[in-house]
Length: 135
Image (tube, rainbow, N blue to C red):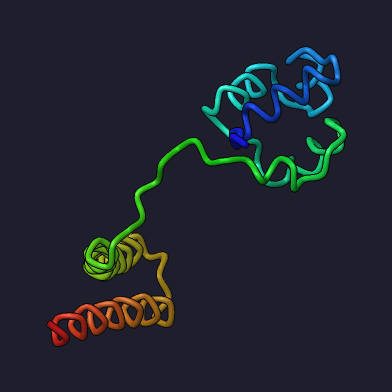
């Protein structure tokens, strides 16, 4: 049995109910363009709307959620994760330093806040250095 995408499921259930995209959109308090995007697989309903959508279409949320994912998502490799983490650990201290500098110049920074921001930056630098030690 071929598994359908969520968009195909929404489309077929909508048609079974005899609703137009506009009618379903009105019941969901969204635009007909949003329903069209759901059905074409360009977008998905947000998580908060799934229960209401299932109710309107007369199915359980399981029916909507058991759809096959149409997008192929590349799983992150350990190397990519390490690279992204390394970038973040280098960016955080820079961001904290800029934040401290700018807010200090504007006179909007209390000493305690500055120390907290610099502390976060120091932790990020330490974590980054720790990663270098492991290599």
